[in-house]
Amino acid sequence: MIKKKTNRFYFIFLILVSISLALFFVLKALNDKIVFFYTPTNLSEDSDIIGENIRVGGLVLENSIKYSNDGLRVSFVITDNKNMIDVFYSGILPDLFREKQGVVVEGNFLKSKKTFNAKKVLAKHDENYMPPEVKKAIKNIGK
Image (cartoon, rainbow, N blue to C red; front, side, top):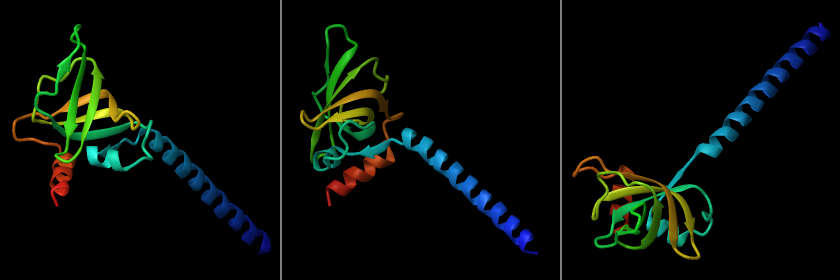
């Protein structure tokens, strides 16, 4: 009888350890893929996000888009109507990218220079669309 209880205990213990290890490895793998969303105001207030891969959303400021001579590098300013961030991007912009429109950029933020080095630029798909996170963040800034 005691041997049966001991075997059952070891079996349950082995299952719990296996589940814990599987959960640990899944969470570890997901941690490398998670990309957090911020607004320019969040970036100016939070100092813990330097060097991480993040997304920033807002509106492209009017008259802020500047192209390099080769046309592949571009700089522009994103605003949430409270704070602004300079964005630098190398590559071809989406066709729908333009001033006064919602945009989400993914890359790294350099707080010391208040600049953002973008690896991806995601633009809206029609004149009425703005990413939900951007719309909510801009509404919250006004409150």
